[in-house]
Figure 1 (cartoon, rainbow, N blue to C red):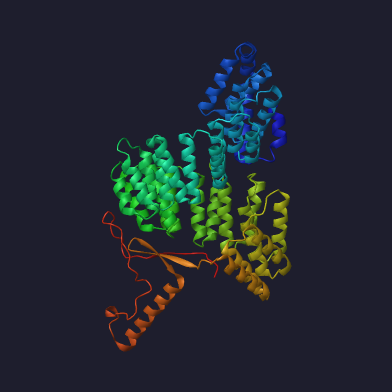
Figure 2: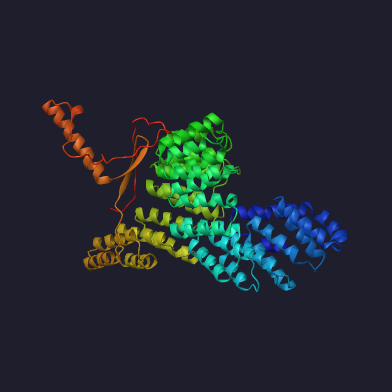
Length: 600
């Protein structure tokens, strides 16, 4: 049964799934005699004990042994029950192999073990965790009786696949069905509201928690996460302070991360002072520093990590590496990378991305080659390849990009995502290979990958660079159909039509933007002065620098003291700013910059 499965599916799975299947084969060969003898004397009499043993293997994180035991059980007897299948479905979920789950589902249908609520809930959970949401919804719709666990399984599936709108739809359906909400349901509801930035809806869920008298110790972390994600740190602090009793590390970590993400550094450091720093709290805070491009706060976190002796933790070092890379400090990132004792795939990917995002594509490719020389220690994943392709695109490394895209499937057995195709199309378009661009697109469609907005943007840019008018109009049409209300895409299409002289279409698109009230966000830059990220117009920065040069030239010519200059008009960078509280030290007078990628 297993060998037939391998022959059918070995060419469609990535390396991680293939390694799981190889482990199954090795385990099966190694324990063949044992399971055969065990099944003849034991499986024919004690089905309940066999079910317990399968479940024990699953709970201890050994899905391979659970699957082998199930396979031996099926060979010994045909009257396995629903409890056997539910345990095996959990093993399939741990293996992340949906094909095995489908086989188990087929056997459940044949034996009639798929009719109960528990069995169908396990199927919904298995399909959703393996990414087959359509199958999960289909099984859910077939259920005659749905309890709160079944609803929660579907709800968590939508959240896991980043579909918060559909998750909210499930919550509303639960209300219509008068399903009693559990703490898990309410936590999922708050997570959906956080993803949608739905403040009022989240406040209603908070009110529901209070009215129902649910355990705030369980739900407080979800509430703190929600209020932090929508920018209401004061409300998150109120929730935290309202808990008079016991607080665990997870609450502290969530609040610290939220404060850092919203640049409330004084509160973040004060909360950290209430509890012993831990790796999770510092890692979460560093993620916030990376998002805000805040080098100074990241260095403060690095200092705390050094004092507490956390620098041997790979997860924390990866977060530090990513923070320094996004703030433009590649040399610091490299020194951190060299000091990591046990480098994982995230470590290598962060370092490759550090070189790529800072315009050092050649070093990124060399780092990728060094990673491959490590042999089987660390294998690149899809994110690694995406970082390499992006670095090649930004540095004009066409041949290296082609080789990387070829390795993705042929060497490592990974299926390219739309993001990989978008980067590859961009590389070919910049090189002037417009036929290669459309060949890559058609190959993507043949492989069953649906084009996303990013794909059409890459195609449109390639057509603009290579004056491919006819196919460029096709890309523009599809892009506007997918994203009719995104101003940056409309401006991109407008620029394309302006380049080919279609001013009638340009006027039409501008009229559509005015009718819809859409305004394109201007290009911008981040500057960091005295520990505070100020968001300023690029034009204002340029004018300010020109003004300073003018005054300095005047100082050279006229002999006036440039240091005593007093501007008649306020400087573009002189708005009043509320500096952080005294809980944070002042930053040395250095300036770090990060430019946006807005379309001019």
